[in-house]
Amino acid sequence: MPEEAPMKDVVCEKSRKALQFVEDVTCNADEVQRKVLAEILSRNANVEYLQRYGLDGNKADRETFKKVMPIVSYEDLKPDIERISNGDTSQILCSQPISEFLTSSGTSAGERKLMPTIEEELGRRSLLYSLLMPVMNQFVPGLDRGKGMYFLFIKSEAKTPGGLLARPVLTSYYKSSYFRERPYDPYTNYTSPNETILCQDSYQSMYSQLLCGLCQNHDVLRVGAVFASGFIRAIKFLEKHWILLCNDIRNGKIDSKISDPSVREAVLKILKPNQKLADFIEAECSRESWKGIITRLWPNTKYIDVIVTGTMSQYIPTLDYYSNGLPLVCTMYASSECYFGLNLNPLSKPSEVSYTLVPTMAYFEFLPVNRTAPTPLGQKTDLQELVDLVDVKLGEEYELVVTTYAGLYRYRVGDILRVAGFKNKAPQFNFVCRKNVVLSIDADKTDEVELQNAVQNAAKHLLPFGASLTEYTSYADTSKIPGHYVLFWEICLSGSAPIHPSVFEDCCLAIEESLNSVYRQGRVSDKSIGPLEIRITEKGTFDRLMDFALSQGASINQYKAPRCVKYAPIIELLNSRVVSSYFSPKCPKWVPGHKQWCTPN
Image 1 (cartoon, rainbow, N blue to C red):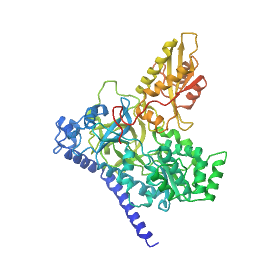
Image 2 (image 1 turned 90 degrees about the vertical axis):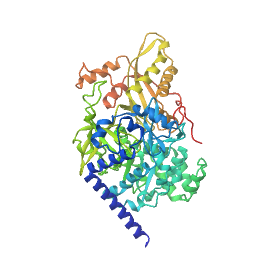
Image 3 (image 1 turned 90 degrees about the horizontal axis):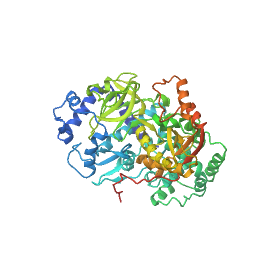
Image 4 (image 1 turned 45 degrees about the horizontal axis):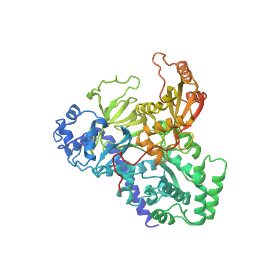
């Protein structure tokens, strides 16, 4: 007991400092932003990219920066990024050495985007993580008296031709000393040992993390994963493997399929024979309904910590079912490009979640968006349109543009945000959507152009049979886990001979082979996406769809068939006219890294 009091004092002081930091930087948001930009430019004054546009980083002020530097997308930076990935170590984007590339879930030409990063960025990410629990503890006190059961995983990594690692941002963080060697803190006390999180084998990692979580079920006060889809996948895994897990708990021995020595050693420090607990889990999991299974197995759970904004909102009903309506908490907003901010009202409803951008993380600008009146094709955006952090207007929507310490300058992230309010002088944003994304199940993001190209490739399989694709639409079916892409096809048959089912199965696979590497990884390695499905509809189905849209007020002059549908009555209409359905017969091809790279030893 004497040791607990000093530790509690330390934790309280850390929390106080964290909350004061948030208060300070939001009160002085514009001043902090000016300093951040000045620091980025002065540090990188001699880099090739800034000199290319005639900017002297040592002398440039914010106004000069805005006047001289262009707003860019990934395609604009791709030649410079390829030079770095191929081994060019000159100061192209950043004065500090690029330590690795963070692979984005966004794609370019079917491959993951590569975001350059530097060693010190790990410190900024760690800082943002350190703010989350002090904020949360204001709303749910006592979280230091128990543990968090979080399902955290690493993913495969590759090496660029120049020898730099390329991997997802969370894999980079979990493998860093900031995570692996973190000092004891009751707020980062997880049921999963580091060894189970850092296990490359997804089955062994999931199994061992669930086993440790069940063994410590009464210590668990909060549960979570990064995305809602990942947490539901863990529950589905439990549904499939609870008998094995019960046997392990009953006997105090871990299943032989868990072969990683470090995982076995770490789990066996927690796993002890417990007949009573095994019987309890067996009784709960044997019941006909799994409604409320989270609160039944982990009775002290206060909330679920997962991202349920954007496309992840489709999983809210499933989470509510398994948790008996526990609060769904979205704590932070981040990407591979940069960590942005946190949710200062974490118990808000998912539809009302807003994130406060932390002004020290990067220099933020905002491109006004009018989604009802988009910029005409080919018309460039006026650079002066960009708005600073403190000048955004309540209720307006913007595309986020960042300038980072790691060498991105006025980079369009692709996220659409709506101003929901202010914390002191810093705005708070609702996440509206990812620009141009039409389909998403997990980390995958498929846009309309990519889907169109994939469908065109697949439709070529129909031509030898005198058939053609008349019209199509799609939706992400998450009624089962893993979710999968569904395409509704209406076809025109000029011949009388029926088309063999294998042809449509080939069409399914052709679409999957044409989709980006993030999607294919989800199918092949992560098992987070199920086989793609094509549902063939009756002739005239898309005329019915148009009639429905017109009855709801759409203009006949402007109507075009949607390439993705989410509205339940439309999905019901389409499903009512399905005559046959087909699934992809096997997984598409996928290897870690870009096609031309090698994987690390």
